Image (tube, rainbow, N blue to C red; front, side):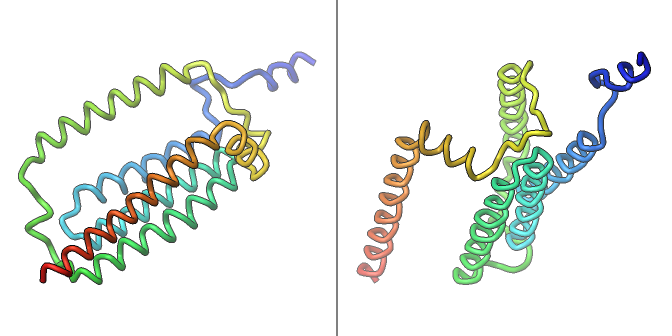
Length: 183
C-alpha cells in the first residue's frame, strides 16, 4: 500500500510530465516563430512566421485542455487574420523581397524595450498566478464555460469593444474616401 501512495504522490517541480515537456517545447517554437515574425525583413516571411506563432498558441491551448479556445484561435487568427494580412500585402503591392522600409535602424532600442516589456509581463504573471494550478483532468475551455463567463462577467467590455471596432471601421472608410476625393 505504501508503494501506491508513493506512486500517487504529487509531482514536484523537478519531475515534469510529458504534457509539461511538450508545453515547454511548443512554447519555445512559438517564441521562435514570434521573434522571427518581428525580425524578418521580408513581409511575406514575417506573415508566415506569424502563422507558426499563432498555431503554436493554439497547440498550447490544446495542451491546457481548452479545445474550443484552440479552435477559435485557429479559425480566427490563423485562418482569418493572417489571410487578411496576406491579401493586404498583395493588394498594396508590397515588395516581395527584402524591404528597406522594414528596418528603421533602431534594433538595439527596440530590443531593450522588448526585453523590459517581457520582463515586466513575466514578473506580473508569475506573481499573479504563483499558487494557481490548472487541473488538466477537467476541461477548461469548453463552449459552456466560455459562454457562461462571457455572458455573465464580460458582456459590457465585449459590447464596448464591438462599438470601438465599429468606430474604427467607420473611421477607416471615411479616411479612405477623403484620399480618393483629393486625387
